[in-house]
Length: 140
Image (cartoon, rainbow, N blue to C red):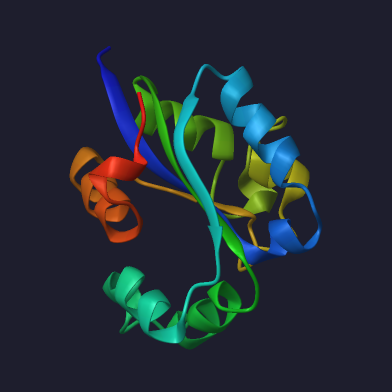
């Protein structure tokens, strides 16, 4: 597999519980390198734009509210097969269906507060990285 970059976000439910370091440790232990990272508050407009693909879904309003309820940690991860690796480490969106030892199985509060977000494909990763980071903020 090739070295690639992916986007990762530690959501408000996790930052509120002060488990950011534990999540980053899981990512790094899986061979992913953090090449950019910052803690921010997402505005309602940013959340609506970032999750715009879900605008017509019934959970959209709750999603926006959840994502603006506290700080998030946005990251660019790099590594061999980083997109797939990150998704494996995160686990299934529904923590009840997530594999043992995954971030969501171990840390998620619910399907809505599932602690992390990660890009699902190369094009998505590129767009999500560009949404939060400029090239100058990403180191190798």
